[in-house]
Amino acid sequence: MVADFFRRAGWDVTAETPAAAADLAEAVGQHWFAVAGLTLSTDEGIGPLALAIRAIRKASRNPLIGIMVGGPIFTARPELALLVGADLTAPDAEQAVLRAEGLRVLMSILPDRG
Image (tube, rainbow, N blue to C red):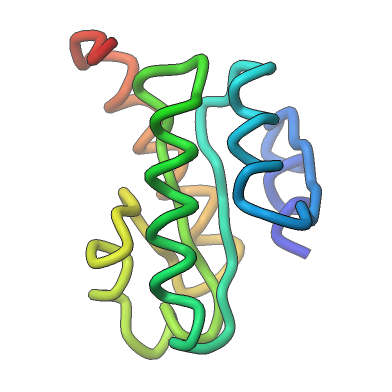
């Protein structure tokens, strides 16, 4: 599980499977998150995932929240990450941690978008 890789790297991880995008948006609105990670298996969920990412960004207590996407569809077609509005994707859990670390550093030096 990707969450285990993040925990071993020292991240404080909340791993949930929300019933709807609104539940995820509510969670990021109540708690501060540096990065939100979402997974998708097939391209059938591309539209709903894009909507969920917009909802997360709008509701987040962190105006610079990073959005990472993963799963088989993004491994096969990494360019879809930009299409859904994510900041990054990674081919495996080890790369996900490294890329999220880089994103967290980058977001810490950018001016607040809020």
